[in-house]
Length: 88
Image (cartoon, rainbow, N blue to C red; front, side):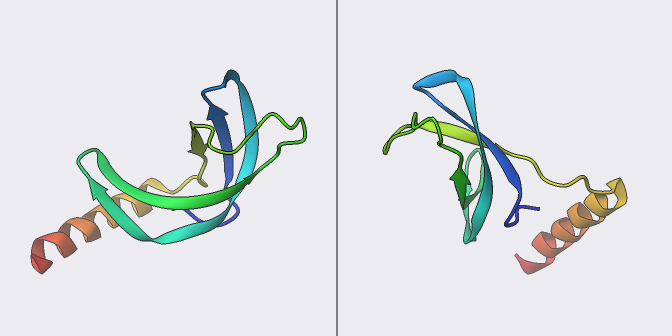
């Protein structure tokens, strides 16, 4: 589950071998449906002590969530399946 405070590692195209560590500070409320899956926008704070990052740099972030029990994950998928099937 995406939530405030989760750690993230950011990589930018300008420095492909560098990793910048940060944390999520805000999670968007809307989910965008795309062909590749669902997208939720999140904002994070990144450590830029070396002053390497600049505005408009492109890259991606990997966000690590807390481990979930397998039963919880399966139950959530089942509930989502049932909700989608009966609401359409």
